[in-house]
Length: 447
Image (spheres, rainbow, N blue to C red):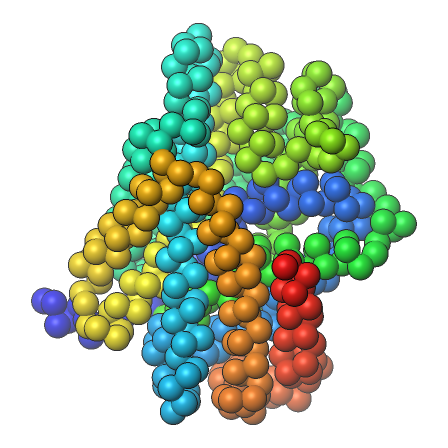
């Protein structure tokens, strides 16, 4: 039985399954809390426009490259680079991706646990159990952080143990439609409330006077991070993709789905922020919009509490359930990367690999649970620096080591004559020159 499990890596049952899983990998907490406030702080609609352009001009070419590497080799990030080159240094690119995925998951699990804990905070507050609501929402309580981290990791492990089609695909086919449904319901409620129209105007009416180098590179950074590039997740997911599928089309659908979630999140968060302001809740600090955890765990809960009653509880619980789903679709892909590595390179059965690696990462999460200041450091090293670095190296590898002509051979499976199309010719220029240079410049700015 174990031998059968080792020999069968698994595959997606359909292109829809792949697109939802890959989009789920990209969709995460950053789409919900970072993108809307980045947009609000950088010209609203102007930032949105530049962000969309960057997603398709910078993110999309790199995404195609990652998926093509994965499908050509049918291996994890490390094994993929081994298969495509005899140079022993190139697998280090894949290993860096695996390491980044592990370390990002270790702190992301803690933050994801916070989102889950606030589901209970909203329930306790609505029930008049204010002391319990305050207690369970204390993100500085190491023991609480640990409990919710264990719960979130256990859920992630159980899905990964189920395999590619029966675990990841089945879960994301449920979670992603639910995520969209909840987003649309919350948007419908919020934009109908007095005071939300100002936020909607800020978001949808471009202030082109604010377009400058800082805005462009802020949008570029958001686009790169929101698409889950540079850590091998899409190489791994691409390795399970049928050779009959159209990779450029699939990558375009993933990019579109991710950007759609970010856009919808803006339609929810910006009006909600101004609705909160109309109710006397502070949404500015030192002249800047409240962002990140402060927005999610202070401003918006205050808004839900102000709504009050059963309606406030329903809106609050639904919102944090949405965040938990977004987080889970990301943790699934983050764990799958090292699990795939263990299966391919060391012939560890999937269920055992998921348990051992998941528990190992959980140990790091438990350390972070009692010292949440580490989250900022981990995020900076492995996300802000690690992912762009991986993206640059992957682009350069495809362009100059594997060669674009070989990549075209793979990209033309399911898409005949892609190399001679306008998109194909543009992709070659971007993956060889523009993407590496632009990502490098943005990476240097982060220092």
